[in-house]
Figure (cartoon, rainbow, N blue to C red):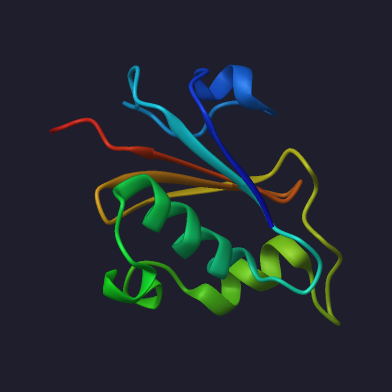
Length: 113
């Protein structure tokens, strides 16, 4: 897994926007490697963004169907991998999360509502 904090706006960090209200907060960008699930990458990126041990986060499956997310992004025996431009966005543990078909997961702290 590759990761880095990316201070650029999401539009400058890759293939388009999908997370709103991020303002000037830094982004955490992870790229999942072969054999690593996108849902695992989300947990790791959110843990980094929130400075929280991953085991102390709420289970991701309470927010999003992790099996469906993994199958959509990486593909499975019934469907091909997601196109690079596809993104799935949601909020998790005070963060805006965007998971892209190209393997990136971009996380930023959510703006207060």
